[in-house]
Figure 1 (cartoon, one colour):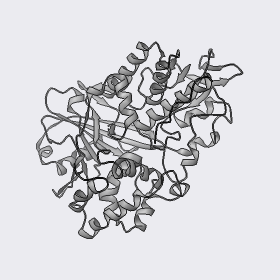
Figure 2 (spheres, rainbow, N blue to C red):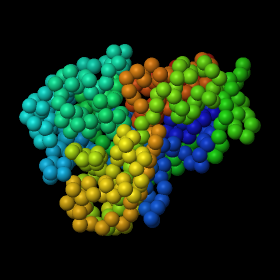
Figure 3 (cartoon, rainbow, N blue to C red):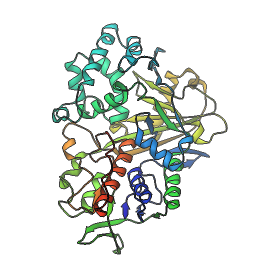
Figure 4 (tube, rainbow, N blue to C red):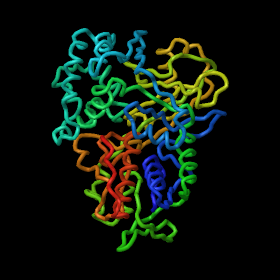
Length: 448
């Protein structure tokens, strides 16, 4: 077996094949594994290309961490608890009840949410209950934006900006005004409205390059797999008895089956026309960027592990001190989703603006000295989950039984998250194993 692409989808697929007893070669064009989750060292500290978190409901991603042997290196909240601050000094909390069932577990925190007026708060729970009834897989859900749906249910612009988009932006990587109702409904139903603890937030205590790429390579090689880094693939050519993977230097090897786990804008040219549904239209999935501003202070400026902001260009802030490996001071990462407006800004100007905003949001930051700032930009962080994109997301299986595709952009039922990537890789590998080994029984599908 071969897996083309060494991101989370590719790693999950390769490990699934290896654990089933298949010989597997993982081929990656870059000199590292981990895909969109990678780390680098600068100014004596470790930084990630972006802040990535997961939720308790991300069951396949958590199983993936278990398989890599790194679950002890992540932190998972025992209870959803997010401070939401504003430049005025007003603070509210998004905190779930530990006793009430969903969706009532959010009733108290919504009723006390100080960033909204009393009438706006009164309209939140009815909208949440209505959202619980939306079918994310229903065709009608992918024809309107989440913003249109919210407006029709009495949600004011302030409610959208100060509450609904706090969740929609980091999970769908689009504001409610652009995001498909289908994707937003999936996020809110699975994460917030069906199980009380589903939205408890987790994050890595290590640089992501070590958590995923480094640990992934060790696990795969220990299972007998082979890793080829710095090897670009030019074509995947299905044949009558196998699949040939042709590298950029013109050489090729034949395998029993292949999982192609590369970004959606790269997969089309690798495969013969017609291999994947709507193959010529995959680029229409588009891209949505994420920008992160990393700031190292000479002292601690907040005791919060994470926080969200309203009425500010700052969206989410994370304490990155531990994975950065700092001996003193504090490292904060400010994550800016749907960051199209920030792509063309000079790094120094962008960092200065965010530093100024943090000084308004966090009083201790105003008197602290900034040691370093680093700006990272992921221009194609996710596909653009606008209405109509569901029809463009293909299943794992293709027109050739020995070729499957994987990636967070495929039809996982999830937005482009680490959970979606891992689910796609595992599902593609399972389908491929059954195709290559007809005597095998198709494993039970992972529930969406």
